[in-house]
Length: 179
Image 1 (cartoon, rainbow, N blue to C red):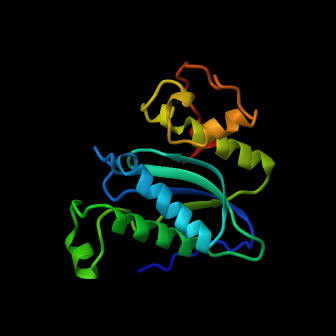
Image 2 (cartoon, rainbow, N blue to C red):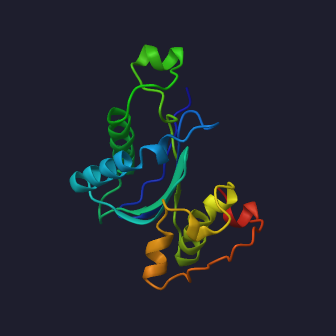
């Protein structure tokens, strides 16, 4: 098996995509949003990090975190979040033979995708991508209509107008908004 290498940057800001094991027709994350919030809170109490932006969709989530100075261990935090959420919900998911052998639940994909935020422009593009994501996937027509998003906090803080991106569906260039 190939050894996967992740960049190391203490106290850095990171963009993440974390997927459920089965995406098709899955609404697990929004059906159990309170359990997910509780697990995030518990992990943040023991292993602090700042959530700069987040969107939780039915079967995946995107977020941007900033770790404390000197800290590089986002992997432990994700492991704790995934395990805590898996324990908090009923065991009803399909499990592959491999997951059964390893004693794993079948809630999450084993890995996640991370991107080290390089500068303010990179951060702004990723925050926009996060907030646009429910429209991109067809869950809502207007960004503000999706309840499980930090977009609403950004509106309250005056960073975005309430009608950001209007209600008009638009195509985002994969090179500019990549997932």
